Image (tube, rainbow, N blue to C red; front, side, top):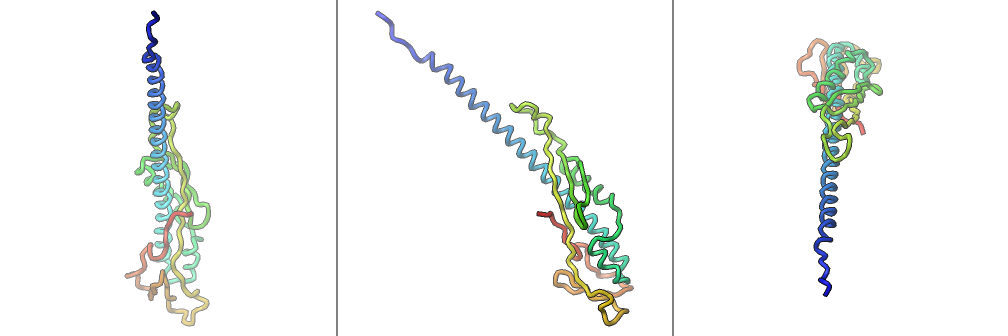
Amino acid sequence: MIPPRRDAGQAFPIYITVVAGLLFLALAYLAVGQASVNRSGAQTAADAAALAAAQNERDQLTAQWVKALPDPAKWRDIFEGRVAFAELEPCRRAGQLAAQNDAVLNGCFPPGLRKYRVDVQTSKSVGRSVVPGSEKYRSTASATAEIEPLCSFTAPAERANGDALPELTCGGKVWHLKPDDTTGLPKPEDLFDVHLAD
């Protein structure tokens, strides 16, 4: 009499293979999640660095406007960003913000007037995973921030009274300025808006 066949032993290798495959997929999804978090961190660092650079230039432009307050003929160039300023300062500030967000500044430059573009790379790698080489991979990201003037005024040649300063209208608020009075002047955020470019 032939004994009955037992299939239990044959199913065990299949079970092990399925479990191993599912475990590998789970680890692969974890690696993808780690990469996504790393990439998100890089973009956050890039956004912060670009905004920091633009805000630094905004502050420099505001300081120049305060200095040129008695001479309205210079205002338009300042508001349009066509003046000399300490160009290294915005990128130095961008580097500081990138470092605060665990990233390194790889590039910083103005692609045009009143704009800053930065490129960053995360300081930390994605980490070890089932994906070969992931422990060496560092995410990169870029961002551009721009400075938008918020104010309008009547040019000196168009004013009837050449001695008085023109009214400065910023975001619907009117500022009545005096050449010899620097108290109560608009703040940098009143004069310029800083935001990430689309």
